[in-house]
Image 1 (cartoon, rainbow, N blue to C red):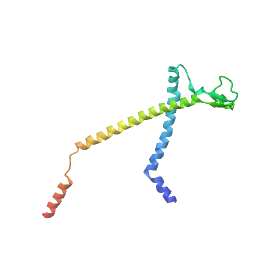
Image 2: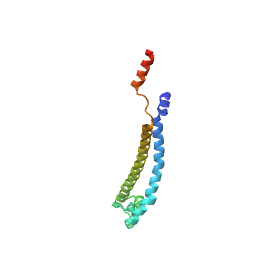
Image 3: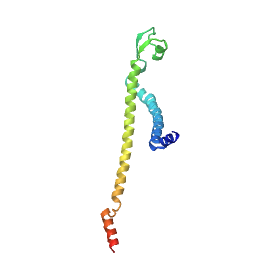
Length: 143
């Protein structure tokens, strides 16, 4: 069982996946900061300072009027936090767009590299075909 585990871990796909997860976690921190620290304030500025995060409806319980979402949750009332949900959707759309742009740039870089390899392969002189080599070997054997 230990040997099977070693074989499993030694496979390239597992290591690639582990690296991807680590980079993804680091990228998540960057994108979260981008959304929270740069984009959301701009959205708030454009929308007149509206912050959906503290928008909620009290379903039951005694919550003071104008209390923040955190205070309403701490008061123990049953609340419908639609603002936090709206902000989560906005954050998701922004993050999805940023990831889309990143994947698009990576694909362009890969396409450019593949095109450069194809051009290099086209410039290389073509060698003899398999049939030509076999004909040369046959001629050499007949001599």
